[in-house]
Length: 98
Image (cartoon, rainbow, N blue to C red; front, side, top):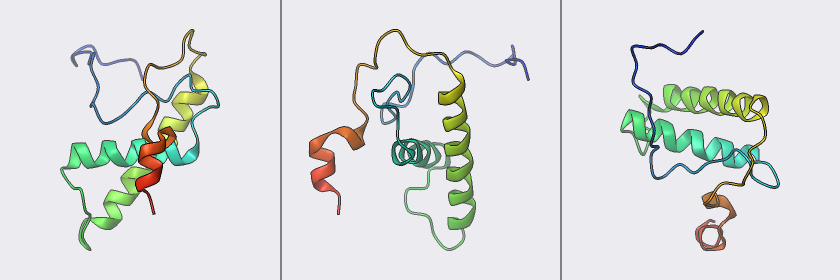
């Protein structure tokens, strides 16, 4: 499907989602799922899914993660690595995780 011309091209990105393309080593499944989860939280306004929202929320996360992995696989390599490390590669973030 070609890019719909009626939609504006978005230049920026949610500040909580970091670039995964061009990482060395490549983005892990955990990093891709984390970015997908953050995206679904942002667009849905749901930070803690309930019994009523849990199943559609998790289905959306799985779909976004699958598509994100496909995009990362299909795009050509970057010339330079991303400027910021994904949160799961930052020691201070890992230290806060159970």
